Length: 419
Image 1 (cartoon, helix red, strand yellow):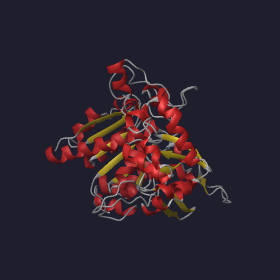
Image 2: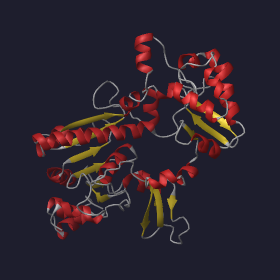
Image 3: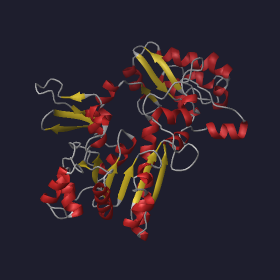
Image 4: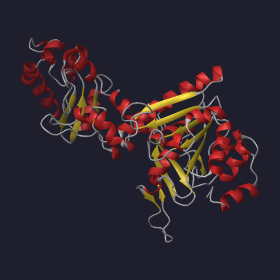
């Protein structure tokens, strides 16, 4: 193997994807960084996941685990695979002089480096952006962290919950009469992931035009704050602090969660068009002309909503199942069953969009995981790939990108630089 482009063939169809030919060095762990580079891999980039030989990404031990019934006790993390699929595995001790030099050699052949250490960590290793851009002026250096590379909080340790707390989202979520409630997924990590991908692609485009890379500085706190919708302008304009509203919208009605015979549905028939259609569909066409609720502005008022709108919607839904309500709504009004993950996995729309994909592990069997929401007509994504074993592709990566032979790799292993 002599060319970097050949590396992609080890994990996915060669020559495929919008980012075909782009080489990404992934020095990340847990979710925000790994998911960022995983999306780039889905899009066709050649991604090399670099782990410390003795301190691997600890999500390799996160459940759910495959192979729990094996006699040899070996298991494989489906969690790790979902966020590290399509990558090549390399171990490298960046605390050694030889490890640092190998990373610089890799950077010389790379287009992107992604890291998610606390701000300043890579600088203390002598491998920060200012150093690596001297090695490769085209390098796009994407740094994802809790609070960003600047500011008084930059050195604070952070998790997803830190971002939800300090970005304002936690204070807005929950029921009006209860304590704030965290969003039920790692939205701090995943929002930073998505901004990391957007920033990386923008910087790549600039580097392709000019030959000059740049630092892409992504903060989880910043990313969460950007998701708070109207909260900032509501405060800066009106001086009002947004509080938890439960399943209600601050002013749009009807627009929320409603009970039905076998669960709950979302119904968003607040416009005049959708309200009129809903009244007709559910057998009360005259209600659309009721002077108490015959305009959207009237339906937004507390009195009209409490006295007329909410009772009507609850009356329509109480004796019908989720499936019956969705069938009645059809393509005419916005009504969706609130589905649990088991229902979502078997949803025909999810199936049609290839959003739960299967990949066969040679040891542990079939794994079904989230597919890619990026649907490109000419350069489709390739999410049906596995995550690497620790250092699985060390020889191939170091040969293709650094020109090292087997004897040199063996020596590095013996000295503990590689696993």
